Length: 240
View (cartoon, rainbow, N blue to C red):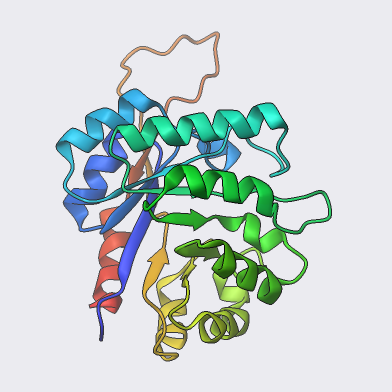
């Protein structure tokens, strides 16, 4: 089997170090897991960039919710992108839509121009668009390097046929990276297309907080998102 790259989203320093230690090939650095990922701390990125050897792609998303952004939010995204570019980001992840669900090409062009030669991924806002094949063609023409997609469904397992069509449509013009509820058993039918190059899987786990004392009058979630080595191993066994 040709090597397929495994990318995982991480939301803290601990998970980032685990990702490298467990054999993940690239991380997507985000904040706000509960929001589906937003722009991370520049400080955390800087520390990780100095200590990790695997590539770090940075999420550029000013808030959770929809992907329809105001002019101020777009300028904030552009400013963040330029900042992370100066700090050595290996890639960027972003997406923007219009109210009718189609891709906001103007905003994407601004961000792509700011990124320059650094590769950019259009994230799962793609799955909201009304016509995935037309949207893919737009992303190709804009110059995105890859698109993260679950095939317009809640999980990859429900959209294998759609993802196969997208892989064939994309060929070598853009990387179609399946992700979103991805399970190891989804990989073989996608690999059989001969066009699968990368996958995106959370591989996440939780560990108990280290606090020894708990205020009995408060209910505060103290568990920490981590990477599950067994899940990573399961993917790597199939990808090798």
